[in-house]
Image (cartoon, rainbow, N blue to C red; front, side):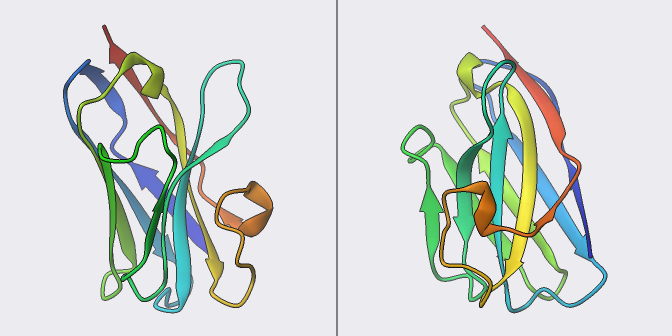
Length: 125
């Protein structure tokens, strides 16, 4: 099982960016998927998650209303659309996944057993 995150870079405050996560190694149609981020000097934190069905999403309060997670089960990918970006969104973003039966914990790292390598972006003020 491998996850490949992409889409990082440099964006100005108020701008938009889309991160993508491509899964490989098996079909991910029954896997929940999520994004976490880790800012310099801080712990990794939950950003957004989407259930394997695609009909339920979860967001951290800090990104609610600005970020949108979606998935394409036919392509084993998910995307994180980020709007109204703020300098505090600067971080390394990690995609994560788990079998739908693995855990019901959406918000902590222990709820996921597969992780990508991370993609970094910076929001300039």
